[in-house]
Amino acid sequence: TQLLEQSPQFLSIQEGENLTVYCNSSSVFSSLQWYRQEPGEGPVLLVTVVTGGEVKKLKRLTFQFGDARKDSSLHITAAQPGDTGLYLCAGAASNYQLIWGAGTKLIIKP
Amino acid sequence: GAVVSQHPSRVICKSGTSVKIECRSLDFQATTMFWYRQFPKQSLMLMATSNEGSKATYEQGVEKDKFLINHASLTLSTLTVTSAHPEDSSFYICSARDFQNYGYTFGSGTRLTVV
Image (cartoon, rainbow over all chains, first blue to last red; front, side, top):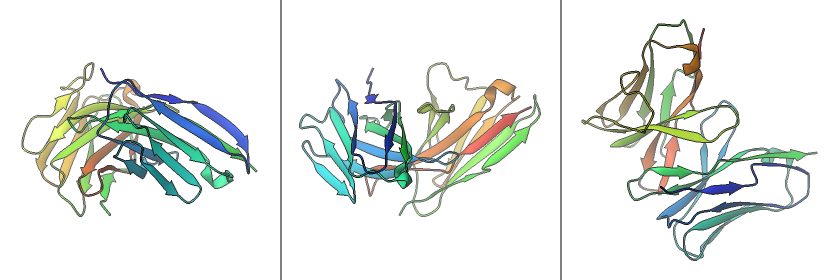
């Protein structure tokens, strides 16, 4: 059974601070996605990483896929209150199903 | 980009009644759709995988007779919660794979409340 461990599950920090969310697995994924979900809405795709070692940037968000394609991180620089939300990582299994992390509830205090 | 339209967004029903949730892929063909259930402050839990023209594959512990899935066309999949009970109250979300972007596009979700 493939598992994806996401940490931390809850993070509350002040505006302007940096943070990193991690997703780790013992399994290899063909790709890994990061999503952000607002209350009462479906998840919205932020980025997909496919190649081992890949780094993608989305404004103040930096996503990295591990060399072995078993882990990934999301780093937010100078967090803003608008970054508040639930962040989810999901790894794509060979049958196209997504293996989900538990999610990180992020609160940025002004 | 790929869009999945999910309706209704909210529904309140009485115990014992059935509720149908629809998901439509608006600008692409979704041969496979996934149905999830999400409890407050938790991650998504896969209920079933729906394939166009064939029977859905249910995850362990999900009652196929209670959660009826129909995927009759490449753009429409439906989830019917039959004989709903208060414990079925939850947030239900569908998604389809966007082959172009390697990602998955999600519907906006349906908040089901059974009273």
